[in-house]
Amino acid sequence: GNSVTQMEGPVTLSEEAFLTINCTYTATGYPSLFWYVQYPGEGLQLLLKATKADDKGSNKGFEATYRKETTSFHLEKGSVQVSDSAVYFCALVPSGGYQKVTFGIGTKLQVIP
Amino acid sequence: GAVVSQHPSRVICKSGTSVKIECRSLDFQATTMFWYRQFPKQSLMLMATSNEGSKATYEQGVEKDKFLINHASLTLSTLTVTSAHPEDSSFYICSAQDGMGGETQYFGPGTRLLVL
Image (tube, rainbow over all chains, first blue to last red; front, side, top):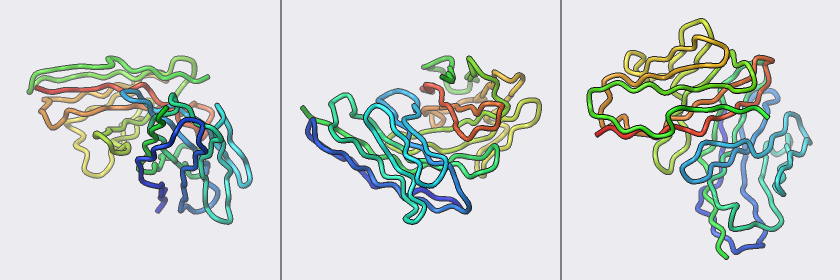
């Protein structure tokens, strides 16, 4: 079946540090890949997505590139801010219409001033 | 962008009562909606897939008679927790896919349920 493996947190960084959260997946075919962010006490917000190999999703300074050869979709940001503190979920949806989302376990990021 | 709302955002109820949670897609039609449950510091657990005009599809281990799902229109799905017990206390989140078959799911802000 499909699966998403995400690095366990928490990840604690100082403000302006470089962020990488690793995500790898297992799926047949060509799934779409997503990063969602969840702020404390809130639902999930779509951060970025990529729907085919070598696509790069980007939003709010975050980036992730769909790497088919390594089955990875690592999230990166060059300079994190305190306001980026949240839980980040990597997810995939198999290709072909309405399909269930498979989530990673979530990585908590804490940015300290 | 696509917006999904949930109501209520927070509810406290007595054990044995039923609670209804609404999930609405505000600016798009959602043939399919999903209901998740999230325990503290954990990922989302899919409970059921709600299809407009037909019965919901429940995940293994989810009691369909306890968690009633109705998807009466293309913009509204409801989850009713019947005869709630303290162990049903959780964060419930819905999501919706637009009717054009896109892969992206848009999530509601969640409903925090506390059963006393």
